[in-house]
Length: 128
Image (cartoon, rainbow, N blue to C red; front, side, top):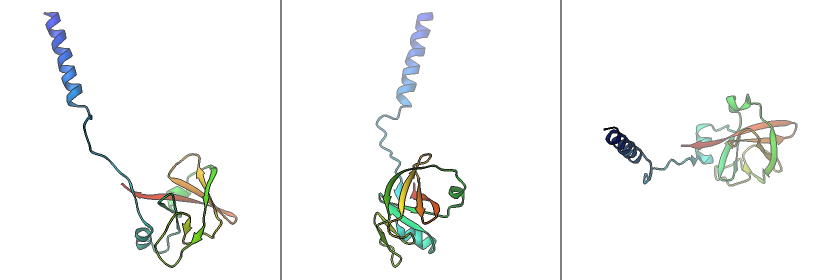
């Protein structure tokens, strides 16, 4: 009697695991970046730049309140584009050419920029 009950419970457990597994599930979640045109359409005065195919925006209240540590320099602003929304990596609409871009130790979606005497925090603008 005990042996039948044991085998029945093992079989039910296996069926539950097999039936509830995600194997073979082809559903994928993707996070797409928003382009400069869309960001500037929503906020024409936005301070943005593009790095590694992603638009980063400053003056985000909750980001400005974070205490972040500047890590390694990952790039710099190479060109300035304040006339249209056709952006590519290393391009900014407000930051001057030569501005250094740093990663933040605590977060991967925020970059730190040194511009003159000020330190600015930029959030990656993505949709997902």
